[in-house]
Figure (cartoon, rainbow, N blue to C red):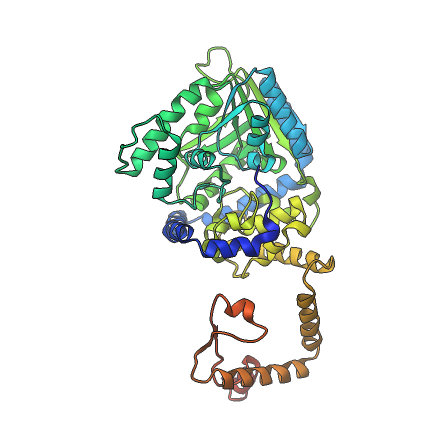
Length: 476
């Protein structure tokens, strides 16, 4: 299970900034997401229109969520599947364990699934004598290293090639210790060799679901490795884990969102594998499960309906927000201290675990707006983080010094003449102190800023308001 360390975000971030391996991985990988997404978007002239369509699909679904969930469940059952409604993580873990026990499962293969991380499925199965095997390449090495994912689509985002080679040598001790990894392909080949027998031996396969289609009772997964297909077709039992907001009304709606998903996530027009699964194996089918179970998980999401945070439920888990976030780009995902990192995690985590435990996260933002500008379904993430800051303040969870400083600022902000007088004095003093320096390495009461970055000294010419007033008088 991913242990919650969100209350220690500042300490986590400090360790991340001082980790040369992590900084190397972030510097190498982050620009690739930027460039690929930009190219994919440029190649689709109607992308902005499609974003509006995606937003509207999700808004309509959330406004009628109970209806579409009932339609979806009825169509799953018509196709021979079983739907399990779970209000809490404990209920979902118990259901998954019971399905595995009834199947006599010893080994369970898993596709990449963030909801399974949220539920702690792996630890729960292991504690009851069942071996879970992660089959996504990134998740596989993290399982070997006993580490949680640091990214929702690239779980091993924080690792470098030398980390992979070291972990494979330490874990695959039955192979030639003198073997040479000359290319990245060699790592993939070794993982594939190790996983092949696990696929064939698995009694149960567990996947997540990118979308659930009410019209057909289908679940949809997108992958670039094909492991998801093997996970849900080879075993006799397939379990699809999905949170309730993953449902969409129709096949057409799902395909509209799929056009947004891959472009926003990896810069592809479509993922290599986009798989629709509907019910159990039918007579004459060459493959497919004999049992198909959908575990529908609430775990706090229904509490978001009708609140300021409902818009967060539009999220289609593309990770574009974190790929473009300067804070995530500096600290990586583990600093956020739970399953969901980056801007989307800064909104979702306080919702699911409480702002008292995750209040640092909505404060870990520059509010530059990049996350909202690239979100394929136009979630106003800065606004939602601001809502959490307000909740934190209202509940007196913020430090006393911050509350005092805000009250002081509010007093001046309500009195424009006093505000302008004080800012004039402040700018003048900083200008004198910073003359010839260009930037401050240290300032009293600003150590939180200057400890990690320089503070530029103000240029001559007065405050913005003073310069603006002068320009107006001069007719400019």
